[in-house]
Length: 341
Image 1 (tube, rainbow, N blue to C red):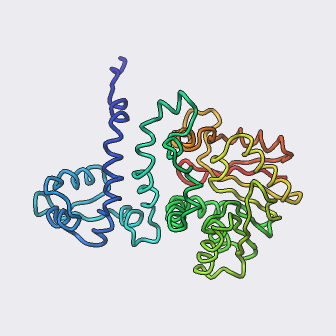
Image 2: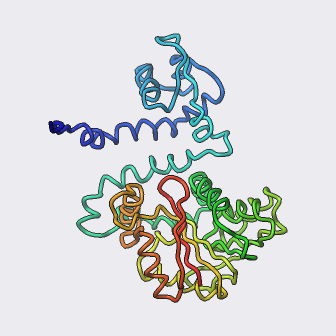
Image 3: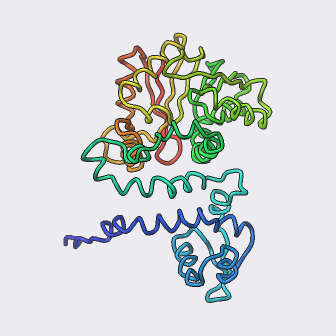
């Protein structure tokens, strides 16, 4: 007998923005940070967060039902507590905090995605540029505190992929690494920690270099991780056996993607490799929802930028002269696409 058709998955996705906004708001107002390691009643938590009494208990119980908070006991005397995941990833006091990117989603992208229909019709960005303001990167690089905040947010969501890459990839035949668009130096730091034979360079714009130097010094890796400053569209890349680009290629259109791949090829010796770490879309474009949604986000942010599959990466790299390829799954929707010279 055929199973009756059911609209529940349609409705779950259609109403998905409700749950998203609850979580993003909870991070923005500091629910998880305020709780920390404590257990508070709804009344106590409402008071500490300076919310209206109407927020209690619906807002907190919604977070419990969504598995972002736990609660000991029921009713007014029940006490809310962070889940292990909430404590690790959503409490600002945690070294593995990822809430920075959620704050950015709430402050910027939530409203920009409302204009997805216009983006699909016009192919134009729907972010600050649409409203006569500076572009995302132009704005960030002109405001150092905001730049550091953005890089902190990116560090939070990049860390698990960079750690996994540092564990999974075979670095034994390489002596030097250059991370292009290295930001805080996180990828170089994580790899240098695990592979003492490697010398690493974190390459980014001059305004970013002091930020990377501070993070490298905090990790006590100055002897093996250095910085280099330049513009990867204007300057040659530093020479290295291995060149990495973590969430860099997807920010650009086809022409600029090819420029970066060619620059990497020119900077590598025979036997060297280029690694792109992204939410790679599956080759059949049927499964990696996050990768496909990320590509739509590139439309929202930049218009002509887009995410890509491992097959796309292989084709572009083949055209430039790379000869061997592999894809290494990392965490969640993300993978490392590798091209060998």
